[in-house]
Amino acid sequence: MENEKYNLLKRGIIYDLIGMISILIPVIGPFFDLLWAPIAAKQMHKMYKGPEGKIASVIVFLEEVLPFTDVVPTFTLMWVYTFVWKKKPVMHAIRVEK
Image (cartoon, rainbow, N blue to C red):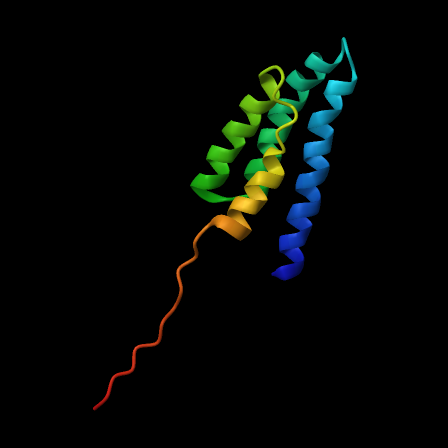
């Protein structure tokens, strides 16, 4: 599980860098964003299942399509949300005495 967790982080950083490359290309960059947006959304949905993955895929699609938002590392932020910020239920043992 730990290895998969960091593989998601590596992939996310790579996808964020690909999305940010368009800033460096003056004329072709915005067209690259239009091509990259659906690919990024599909990858986000593959990486993170469930309703949170669906919401994140919509957010990454909008982030890639909207101008001047390429600097937002959406994949990395989703990883941080999933593995750092998100509260996971804690199992507590209840002792029952007879």
